[in-house]
Image (cartoon, rainbow, N blue to C red; front, side, top):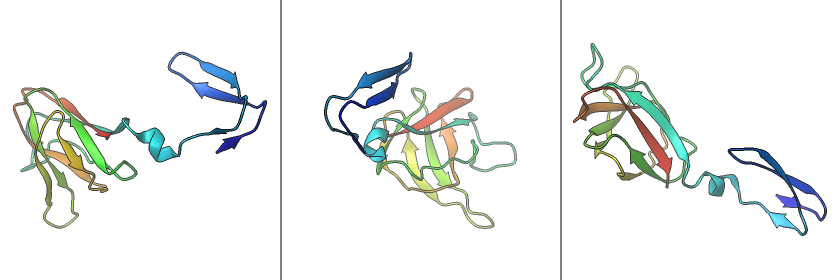
Length: 131
């Protein structure tokens, strides 16, 4: 995206909308560069598999549209699997032994879920950030 001389560009910050004059040509990074180091997805998980489930402890989430590498955040001492929900089939394990600060490749899948948490005493939140 290019802006010409004497145009104003708006920047949305956490506190206010700011208008700045542009005094030259400004090239803004593409959207994937803007996504760097941002949260890709977050999901709430129970401390154990949901009632009637062997593995699943969360709802489904997606990592489609995120960068190639993900960095996971979870409460200290909690480990879990990431599995993919297959309708009418066997759910494959995508990652095992995921914990806080684990980095993985992005499977770029829909219908992923948290499974078999270890070390959780109560429900918790998991986030995957673009790395």
